[in-house]
Length: 371
Ligand code: DAH
Image (tube, rainbow, N blue to C red; front, side, top):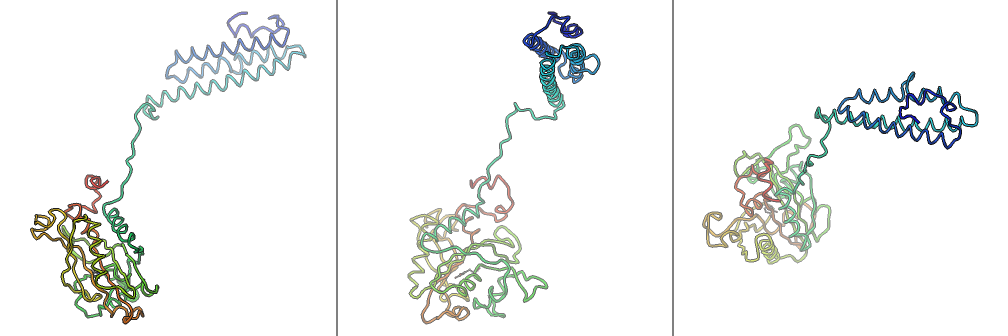
């Protein structure tokens, strides 16, 4: 048998002396081997050149002088009837093999060209590493505060950031011309029905909760609040609070104090001591500012506590009986305490952050310090 398929397929099977299905299959197997060899040769000389695979296609599948056309004309058409089916089947198999291989060769060249042009990904390059996000310092602090209070039976509720003056002020015992409204520079919403506003504190949720639920009530309310403050190192127009409220038939000032002490120890460390300073809020009576011994110097005095040994934590007090009147609770039977913490303040104090804007500028160099 000759090794040149073109010459070989110019002759008929009879001329080649092939007379059995087995011999035919053998013949096709050889052709297939030759094609495979051709393919490798073509690829080797034609690195990066698509024309090479076109030439290979022409040689084997070309309509006029392609090998398969020659087989059709010289082998298939002239085959004795009993051998025709075998020749047909073998021819189809060979054709399928060649077409598939040519497609693969084409893809191979295409990828090489794309690679040279820089179109395709270079799979040997190291991958892109995507950094995992972390929770923001404020979110982490909220979670810490919620953990501390849910551990002693408080549940977490949230409320609307757009409020009515009734919930934000009146029902909290802050009537229209009360001076306490002045230091809450409020964002009123223009043209809103009943003059809505952005809540200036989370305290309105005290009212909304007591309106809906019968006592006992034990809730904390995390959320955003808004004030028309000019932004500086310690102020923004938006900040975060967590409100607390506990009301029941037998809650005393001792429960209030014990809860405050528990909180300070959990949040700042077991050695922390607390003190209450008299203060004023319309919705608590008596009212207090809660201070804790400085978590940096332990009360000796340092720069962080301005050498006083104490740090101001938050405002709080026993719920003013006047508030119960707004929610139809019986002030004769019920008592409770409330508190309102500035979450940003607490976070900054605990982690030594000195500038409010740092919290909201999304600078990774800052955020990554709190993984
Ligand atoms: N709502 C007050 C504020 O934003 C904070 C506050 C103080 C809330 C005392 C309370 C409280 O519940 O008892 O300034």
